[in-house]
Length: 604
Image (cartoon, rainbow, N blue to C red):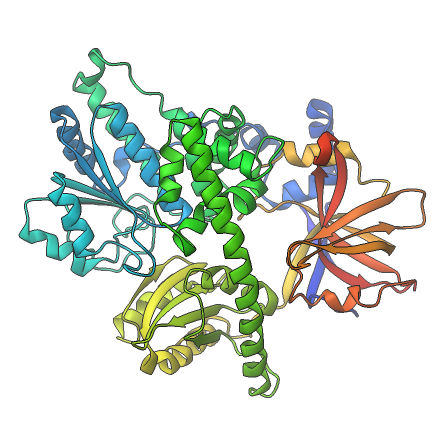
């Protein structure tokens, strides 16, 4: 499929300092548009964007209806997976308890819930340990692992962690226990001591599945385990479990860990959302209710409503609340757990809002002291930072300043816990591991877009310089301006419910294939209001001179450059860039526009 980009408004910089590029396609591409309209009645306006994402006539049916059976890998292609499966199968057949050590984020909680629920269905007892972020930190620790052993587990499985836990895993050699590591974070060239290490990013494993999150790897592991138990005759007297019942959890972990929604990940999410729609998992059902989701969840709901509430337990409360909720079978207990997480999430929002203002102030001071030039990478630290929310703020600052951002919370002993978020093309996980090997950092790991680490206060300056130098080397021509790829220019009258519904049908959208963006040109703002507990969100209507108006929303504008527009907008024409959404408030479906950026129009 052939297409090209046209840079719009070349002489103008957007309010968010971004370039807008409109997709076009030549006459030969009309065949694709005709095919989609004749077979599915898909609006032509979406064709350039599908083409831009590598979707052709030949690939479209598999894209539109991805089937797991066509996309799932053979489990034993993964290094150590067969070895780990056979070892765990021995424990299942003999009915021995299993220890599970999971991370405190959504991916860790879903992974732990999936494997624990499966093993308990098989009649085993499982002991789950989710570490306290503040007392234990990230990853396995010796005391917790030995605690699982003392409870009776002779096999411990770590999920979404363990790949960089050399010392804690080595310490377990003193007791009679085996360890299976199921992880997806970037490994070092040397692997920690464990009976089996299943990680799609291992250098010596089958390639093509590096984008899996831990929940996805765990699901594939269970496919191998289920087959092994079947071959051993384990299910002759017991009904074989339906692994597809776990896809709602796999989808939740996949979306919230922000991995690319392509290939098997797309199938996981597409089918997982269908299962979630049935509301058969009491924990997810209760979480949807407390989040006031009146319609079937989509990727936006998973990423911005369900996920933050599960994460809230690990950020500022009891770290194991999330996995307890996802495993709970009793609806009343599920409601109680979901309400606790919702209360913690409200508290988390307040803490985040307060701390974000402080971080912005520190970054602005940093830029001012740098001759008003934004550094290639931003590192800020303070003993006043709340460790539980620095990752959220690092993500927001990355978007605000278009730079990799690391935020470090220092404790009273001068040890910093850091969280970083990166830009496409700057592999932060690799940089963190290199800094660790150079003894700049005390511990750390992650993947391309996100990482965590610990650092002594005396080495923060060295880390800052190291990070900036690495980014400068990678981005020799400098960090490019943010570029928004635009599917089409559209009028307000063209923002129809039918078009918005087709966009939903063509999803799920996410990292790797983001939801299409549109430009509404030459329109005015009316009836602007702010909302939210701290007036951190904004909504208004726009009109382009026709009889129709369109509602526009933008979340988390507290430190947004767009505020300059909202302080002075009357009788000014703007070009708006954003995504179409369906508002289901009060059981009525109406189209709304989710704003990303603005350019002042010439017609003002």
